[in-house]
Image: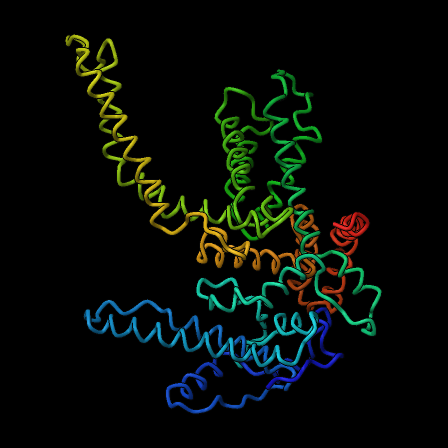
Length: 478
């Protein structure tokens, strides 16, 4: 049974031990664990500290669970495919049970919130020679994660508390003042700032589309005011961050301005249409369960499952139904338009279609449209996405939707934890990276102060704004 974490190692914000090479690698441990399970032996002992055993085994079990879901070889016969599917289901279920038993024993020690956070944010290398280490929570981004582990009440409560309060630190930790300052910018506060930037971008872009600049033939006219400059800076800086569902709208907006240089997009041009399309895509993206999104603004357990339900319904029901009835839609729409037209462009010598044809083709088009709606509603009801009575808010629509919604929420918490730069503040980090890269081109080694300078920049920009937002929330007891 795993003992409780000692107080000097229970703060996730503390720097990792310098001797990270002594930490065991994950992939070799997976091989040893597989052999032990196949031979019905006890779990092998790994060269890991007792206070890190729960974190390391959690990492190993999750990656072991994911390793079972490899695509089967195409050369296998039907019997081999069936037997392989049964083995995968059995091994995955056994691994999930072992992981839950591990955490059941760990929770018997009554760990505190910061101790559970320390387990989930512990770092381990995947390979013995790896320099980069991954955290346990980084495995939540994978497609296959043990569902019972994601829906475990303690994991759920820990991620919700981390979302609201951030990673906790001890009162007697070193650099206490700065760590407390960093902790003020919780994932919720950082996500709010990230979302606020998106909303300001949408508002500025909408203002430009409503009140575009006038067309003036003058070489001295300034096309780019603060409004246009802000739109370009946000769109350009977002392309230097990890690409998300918002990247398409940023590309459209950036193309709209680049295609009209040195002037600005004006109504009636293709570039102006690009801006309209970018605004539409951005507004829709703000309602998807991908950060930053308004679904995380107030009550994630209420709105994230609804957004996830709509996304899954669109991908698994709306698109297949549309493709299934697309030929009938194209045929009936052409017949209706041809029958209702008084003249036919292709054959001008023919008389207009008789009223009987117009009526029948219109009925046929409405019939296909009704079949389309029927396919949508039938698919939703059969897919177990109907509203059910559940004591767990995340599972209000279906357990599968609740599991996926939790995973989306966990990933949002993880991405907004720590010293994270989001647009346009990522340009500050990009500037530091360029300076470091240019310095390395002249043969100078990487300055050890580069990481400290990056933290200082974060505290002076994102951290300061996050502290203001968190103070407002604390004052209002939200």
